[in-house]
Structure formats: C-alpha cells, structure tokens
Image (tube, rainbow, N blue to C red; front, side):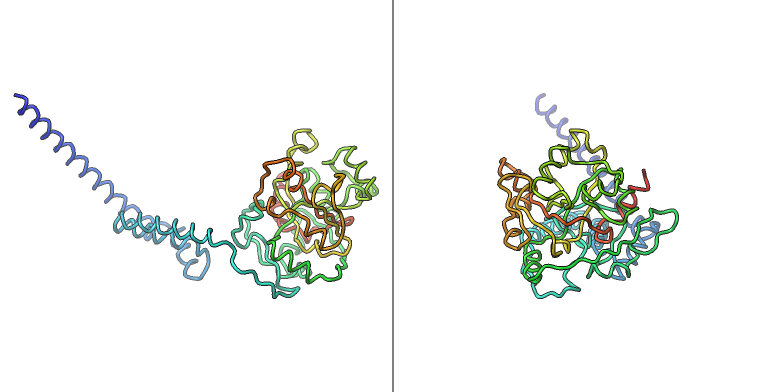
Length: 344
C-alpha cells in the first residue's frame, strides 16, 4: 500500500514538474520574441539609439543592446554577458585613474567634470549635455554664454579680467595630480536671480556695500570672525559637495532650498586667491596664497567624502577664497542653475 502511494506521489510530482518546465520554456520563448520585437522592429527609440551608436554617440548603450540580443537568442548567454560586463566594470574601477599627464598647456588642461564619469568629486546632474571647455577664457564662443532668449534667465556681462599667480605651472601640476576638477559654493536658491542679474557671485561684504538683496548663509558671528581676519571680501569655496556647514545652515533655517554652484578650478590660479587647510576662521587654520598653503589640504579625507573624527570633520572644511567676485562664466553647472532659477 505504501509503495503504491509513493509511486502515485512520484508520478504526480513528475507531471507537475513537466507542466512547470513547459510553462517556463513558453515564458522564455515569449520573452525572446518580445525582446527581438522591441529592440529591432517596433521601437523607434531603439532604432535611433542604434543609429547613434553607429555614429560613435551614446556608446555606453552598446553593451546593453548586445546583452539583450544575446538573451533573446539564448538566455544563459545573455546572463553570462551581463556577468562579464559587471566583472569588466569592477576591474576598471580597481585599476584607478592611471598615469597622470602633466604635459598640458593653458588651453587644453581642463574638461568639464560632466564629460566623464568621476567618483572623486561627485557633482550635480543636469538633463542637458555639456560641451568640453578647454579654456575658460573662450566661454564667449560657447552656447552656454551666448545671448539668452527673452524666455530664459538674463545673465549680465562681466568685464572682470583676472591676473594670475607667479609660478602658475606648479599650481596646475598640483591641481592635475590631485584631480581637482570642481570647486563648490553653496547658497540659497533665492539668491540665483541676483547672481545672474549682476553677472557674478559676490562676497558678502561686496553685497553689503552695493546694498544688494541676498539670503545669507553665514550668521553674525561668522561675519565678525571674517572681518577680524580680513576675509570679509572673499567668496568662499570648498573642495567637496558634502560640506558639514551645509547641514548646519539648513537646520538653522538660514538656507531654505540649498543649491550648489560648481566653479571652474581656474580660480585657484588667480593672484589674490587664498587657501586654507580648514575653516579659515579657525584659530589653527593655515591661510595664505602660496602653493605651500594649498598643499596643506588633506585631500585623502576630501576624496573619501566623509569624516570619522572631529579632526577629519575640520579637514574637510578646507577652503579656496576668491577675492570679491567670481563671474558666472566660471560656473560649470550654469545651465542647471538657470533651469532651477526659472522654476522659481
């Protein structure tokens, strides 16, 4: 009797297994037909992307099309291709940035940080594609600095012409070796229209002198410390978009909607620019205009993007201080700022 029940149960299990396998095989076949139909027949978007890939554009999409095609032909092959892609990406990340090229001229040593993936200084994203800027003296040739239509934000022209530090090549080499592709200034979104109207990001002292509206991120104590150290007429920039003071200003209600302005590193080379290895108003801050002061910055902590101790928390507050103003043409995410300013 027991053997009969066992045999009957085994027979039922085999029937159910066969039904499941047939159903699974049918689903796989339907998926294959759907993917082939989606990618190669009905999807205009896919056809457009394939044409772009053939032209050398959007090449990052090519591996995904190959994986979908292989999966449609034989699913295990697609899975293997996906695993190989993930493994290849991991190997590339482990390899690091590779050898740095320090033989560069003034007109070809910078790219916008949006031109390539980079996890060192993550920045704000935008829906627009940004061009490559080889020289920030040539922004007038770029659409980003062309005269804006009436429907867009008006950005006033600025005639400011910077002078540069002696020994600029040593600064450029240091910046290149430490992969400083972007500097950051955080402010309230309410200040953007005023910044565009006057064509520059101004120091709080200059704003006060001109009696211009601005929503201040600093408090009275910080301004008193700035004045005591002679730093009131400097625009303060950081090396990180994860500055501890961002959260302090938001929690205190000094900033309602925080935006980050991304600044071209060329301001480092300006003659009157100062550097500090921590918050410049701290008693132990080392502040000065020379390369030696810039070299005191703890880029290991900044690269990590977070802090584990109070000492590291202060190290990540290292500053670049630009005298009086930074014209809008040195904003790397200018189109993004225009977009959110229009949104109100």
